[in-house]
Image (cartoon, rainbow, N blue to C red; front, side):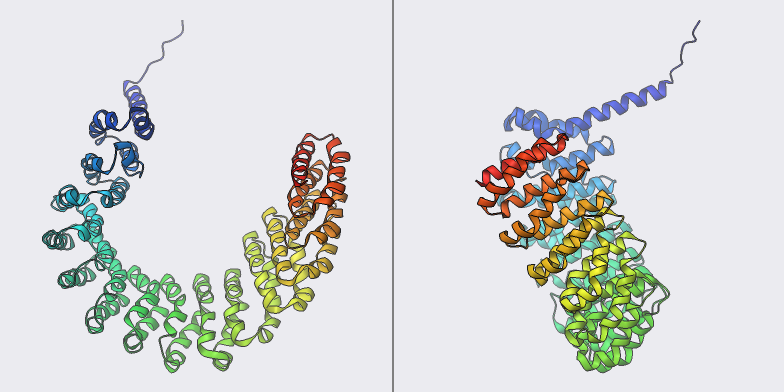
Length: 584
């Protein structure tokens, strides 16, 4: 007798609950369809009130609900903007959730709805909602309120504006770090909205948060330095913002110093040349020498932006030694960050200064053992060549390009390939033909398809730069060689090359130089080649002259490809034939 299987009541209950959640989730996600089916009036009366039952549901249900209530189409589904206040209580409840993702969705939805609320009901429906969130005892609604202040403040009455700022100060002084962090994040947008009379109150909050004992709060003060400095006087920049920048630049937390380093260009731009020269250069030098590689890398990526506001003597004496040290930094990301920006110093120094102080540094980075460093140099090379020309660099470029072109990582090869058209224009057609042409052709036979495909686009760009006559004499012979490759995958690339070149050739050259190659490949024993040939005909037909299509293409398709035994060849040949007949 077969033994009866025992069922765990707990697991059965969990299975049922899971099914219930899936049903409710499906209901929430179909609210738009429900609204269309019921119409605005029934949707408002029958569905919206019942949504409050879902506010204590599972996280995925409440997250989906917040997402649906924030859709722009909801206004029409409710019957117009006048009915938007109906969903505000639901969003207010969601804005109190402890789960950050639900709160963020609710805040985003409220932010979208607020501008569509009428002037008459804005304070009652929205400003008071924000005020209730601030007055809550729990941290989550206060955090949401901070994100909504920049929406509520501009349209509020002067009395309410003052009250909101007073309440905001309480958030800045809250015992919970999460609330203070949200308040610090809100200052950036509030600083441009607060009227001048009440700006000192906000500045006081900004100063207090910059001294917070939590580094997650202090690092937000760095970005606020930029926004606050943009709305205050030069004197206040010196007395209020500068001390905070200096303090954060020396902060014990590397995350705060990292934020200063990554924001340094914005800081010096907004604080001006005098403060940068007198007070911030020393901080920047410390960041370039920081113990943490992340900080050094962030500072290294800002050298050109800082140096343009500092006199040359100071740059040579204080910053250049740091840069030379970073060029040999033990951390490759630091050297890579430096290479992505340091080339921008050449226009600042001019030809003589670049030769004297920077050229050796550039050449050192160009020979770096890490491919990413060399790639970053190649990507910014035009900033140097505009000052020096390529004569002094060309002898070092080729070995570097050769190594990158043959790198084992295909992404390195791909990134190198992307830089070739610009380099070719700068180096000139003769240098390209002698030194780089072979490298570019080798990419057509790369083992990675995306490299081979990108190589065809590369030749299209080169044809655009050097002209169709150059392509006829240098690329078409290479295509003829490629067509003889024993591997059919590489023969397909020759068809891709033909398609790419056709966009840069006049119709007569396409007909005379390229179409005969497609005719040849259409007889290939491999069906995939014949399929690609049929596709190529379809792509080239728009660029051909009508008589040629009528006299050459249509007969060829009819006599050759439309009698092929392969179904895919027949299909794409028919597609090409239809395009050809439309051309008639």
